[in-house]
Length: 54
Image (cartoon, rainbow, N blue to C red; front, side, top):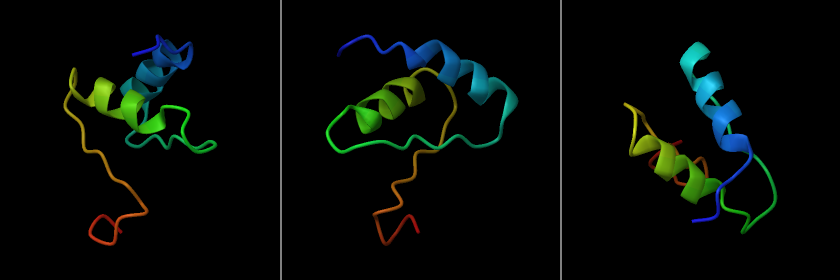
């Protein structure tokens, strides 16, 4: 995985906020980044394009 500059800021936001949304263009690594962070801390990953998650 490419090391993302936003990773540090994202982890800090997750320390202080109950929810954080990753938005951006397609195919830039949002899901990969979110799932990578979720592997290292208690998390719930929701995909709002999924009917089950909505």
